[in-house]
Each structure stands twice: as structure tokens, then as C-alpha cells.
Image (tube, rainbow, N blue to C red; front, side):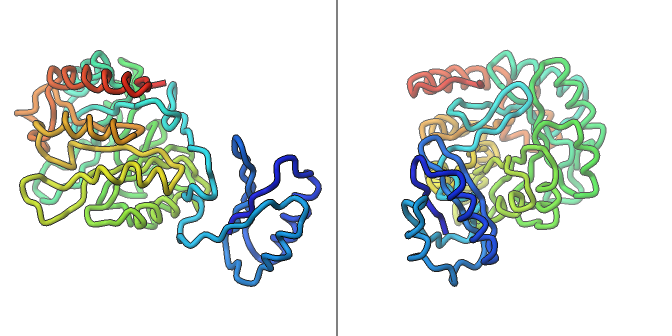
Length: 338
């Protein structure tokens, strides 16, 4: 349930209302928006007397919320959430470009790629230190050494780093990571989500391979329910009957998630398509749809990559794509980065 407060409502009246609601066993979230202040109620509101609430001099209107996600719901939080990430922000209308290799393979590889990505216009650096792979015989990443190399690449370029966590036991290794990514396979690893909800890092949450948008929002709710409100939703393609692409990129998820939630939205066309030739058109489509960020895989030598070489752009191809992305963003009145 959402209680919309009158403009100019007296603080004392609002305080009394909130205390009365808490006494009825519901959680009360007071949210101050740019144009409107609301009180969001979480819990069993079936016994609350709506007529009595409407009679309060500080209440303008009441809406019941049917969706099971509350904290991630735009009805509870009308204004877009803006998330600070080191020297930049995501969710303020600008476009963030998160670029880098699928896997961190060596110091030379990650630093060379990071420098090339920054020169082309990337604003954050991605790289997998821990890699969830379908086959147990495939390269699984460098682990802690991969994170150390990412931190070194950040020192060289100034780019905030984004990397994936797979196990809650590794959380201490991510103390100096700027954004912790939760991969599609872990979207419903609720123990991991709860633990990440207790940390102070932004979380980039990827949609599961066969998950609905509501399930994605409910996974975000797990993180937010523990206190961490800095969640970025990521559309990375879903599994369908189509076999010509690795997954099917759901572009409609971008505007729909932004209608349903106040959280920033990211699109990962690399994992969605699995084909480097499709990354540019899908990136442009995502920008046109209003994404807050793109996550692009770039490798200094994709043919020699230890994982997913077929979906990684060369630095030259990435730079060419970025010129088109910048042009489209400018046409839409958006800036790259801050």
C-alpha cells in the first residue's frame, strides 16, 4: 500500500500517522520525491482502515500495490535511483559504458585492453576473475589473482572495476571492487543475494537464463530487503527456441523495467547474442530503448581468448562502435559517463 501525502503536510501529522501505522504491524518507508512525498507500507495491510487514513489531514490519496516486490517498485519510489560508482554515477540519465574482456587472463591482456577501452570512451572496466562455465573442463578464471590484476588496471586507467562473484565465501576478496556482478546462473541464489544486501557495494544483477522480469525484480528485492538499495538490473538475453544466437536479447525489458522499477537498467549484448557481429546493432538498439548502461566484452586478441572469443570485440571494432553510440546518445541528449 502507498499513502500519498499532501504537499505542505505538517511534519507532526505525518509523524503521528507513521507511528499509528507501525503500531498496526507494518513496516513504514517514508520517501521524499522531487514533486511528491509518499509513505510505502510493507507487510499485511488487509486490516488497515483505508477510510480512516483518507480522513487524516496529511493524506491526499491511497493506492494498493499488487506486485510482490515493494522496495524495487517505482510506485514506492517515483524518482530514479542514482548510484555513485567511484568517480561517476549510474541512473542519472547519462550512459555508462562497461567494457573489458570476458576473463582476466594476464596482466598484459587486462591492462592493454583497459587502456584501449578507456581511449575509445569506456567509463568502467569489466573482467571476469571467477568464471562460471558450463563445462568443468573450461577455463574457470584466475580467482583472487584476477581481482588483483583488475585493481592494477584501475590504477593505470582510473576506470571503476566490475567483476562477478560466484560464492559468498569469496566476499572478502571483493573489498576493493567497485561493482559486484551477480551472474545469470546465480540470480536466484538467495543466500548470496542476502549477503550482498548487507554490503555497501553496488550490485549489478543479471537476469536469469529463463527468468521473467518479475523474478528478476524479486531477486533485486532480496538484496534491497537486507538494506542495500544500490542495485543495477541487467538484461543479458533469455533462453528461447531460437538457435541462431546464444540467447534472445529482450530489448522490451529496458523500457518495461524502467516503468516498473526505479532501479537503473543495463544491457549486455555480448552474452545475449554470442556473436561479435551483432553487438553493435544490439548496443544501438539498447541505447535507443533507454538503457542506463551497456556491458560490452572487448579483448585485445579475441582469437586467443580463453573464454567466449566469438562474442568479444577487438579494440578497433569497439572504438568504431563507440563512435556510433556517442552519436546516438548525443542525438538523444545524453552524455557518456557523468
